[in-house]
Amino acid sequence: MSITTQAARDDADHLMFAKIAWRLLPFLFLLYVVSYLDRVNVSFAELQMRHDLAGQGFTARAYGLGGGIFFIGYFLFEIPSNLILQHVGARAWICRIMVTWGIISACMMFVSGPRSFFAIRFLLGLAEAGFFPGVILYLTYWFPASRRAKAVALFMTATAASGVFGSLVSSALLGFEGVGGLHGWQWLFLAEGIPAVLLGGVVLMVLPNGPVEAKWLNDAQRARLGELLADDAASAGHHRAGHHRAAGWGDALVDGRVWLLTGVYFCLALGLYCVSLWVPQLIQQAWPGHSARQVSLMTAIPYGAAALGMVGVGLHSDHTGERRWHVAISLLVGAIGAIISALVHHRPPLAVAAFSLTALGIWSAFGPFWSLPPNFLAGAAAAAGIALVNSVGNLGGFVGPAIFGFVKQSTGGFAGALWALAAVLMAGGIAVLFVRGRPERRGFEVMLNSQVL
View 1 (cartoon, rainbow, N blue to C red):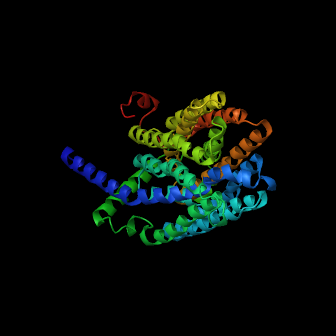
View 2: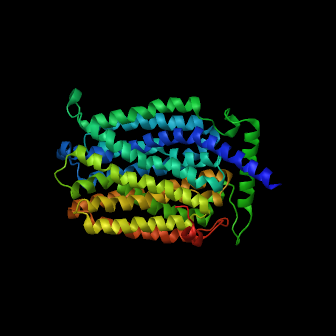
View 3: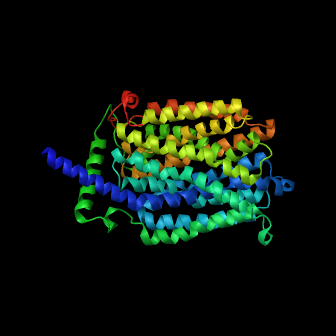
């Protein structure tokens, strides 16, 4: 093939993937903003719930346990949910997930004490199970490995964006105290649950199950995309150092690399939800005397840093073709931020800057991390393996917030929990370096020498 012909093909590929990205990612991004906000909006509501429900035993320990119990329900239904999605299609199953989680999220307004709090959070986890790993699997239908970290990072930036958006909206909703005889936190749950139900209907109308159903791709583009994805699968299928690409769902369950990634993701999820569910309380402790609405607004700062880091690291990971070191270094940055937070958590604005560094490091790891499983998983193994990593790993979302709540109630502060968080993030950063799949195009030295930051 001549240089001119290859350049023309590269240009055509670039335009095709740009079209795919613009058609899918903004909508998936919106869905995840709503999903993640419904998952963590309790962190904003808690600033008022703690006072209103104190007489019913709603303590820091109860909040930490209930905040994390979401992931027990999530764990139980995650793998079955992802396998169902592969069987019935993304459109119908994602619609089901969104409608049920929106209804249950709105029901959080009826919490009257720890027991009802635990029950509804558990049901919310059951309802939402399968959404995130389902979308990660769905993106493998559209993007080859060389473009996937950027796509995943742009999608997952929704977790940070929901924090920024949620802090602004939740701050306003908390001001509805007494309107219609409801507390501000009740208005928060009601208003933020309804969009998920409405968007579920939109999913049925606009989301294609795969490239074959995408009317906005022409026949030549569909054929070219199929060719690129087939080449990607073939290149990943070559044996390397005795490793192979698992294809059956049972293969994923006995693959040591899947379980190693699960451990790494446990560390990531623990960090993610310690920040997501506790950063308003961390900021409130650093800046005592501020109202719940003011604290909610300041929470946008760490989430803004997280969004910038996630996109930048995802782009750099795709540019270099390197994944493991991007994850490892991001987790190291998060650990350094947690250590600094433990040392300055009573000194604003240093505390907010340290929390922002922690968030930046943790969120930056997600794009390159979710580009690792497809390196050695295909077909049903990809559906089961991604769900396994996400469901078991997300138990860190139960353990971390529960530990934070226990430490806060026992010591009155967060320093001990922040030191523990730093240790967990370092452990995850070391463990990811032992994951082996297909050869990465470039190594650690390219990360250091690359001019693309």
